[in-house]
Image (cartoon, rainbow, N blue to C red):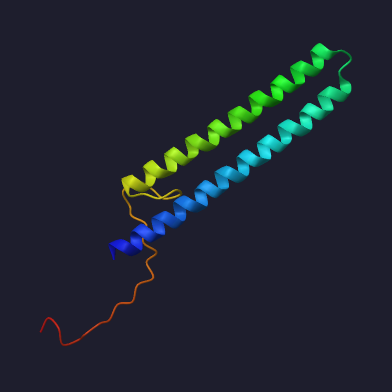
Length: 106
């Protein structure tokens, strides 16, 4: 059942990576919106340039955070604990079927 576990871990990693990408996208969008507000409030070109630079810094930070999250998710998968699970406890769902044979063990 190792392949099932690997598939489940891959799905968890993929979902965690999509979440990190979505979060980074939101941060980038917020940075762009804040830049527009700052530019509208700015009275001189220097303030407008500072607003642009702040936006670029925030976008770069969001991208770095996303990449770091992807690295961490990959490391968690390699260690055998998917994102959102405790290390070393496995990733099984506990929904397997078991049968009881009363004649076994007599």
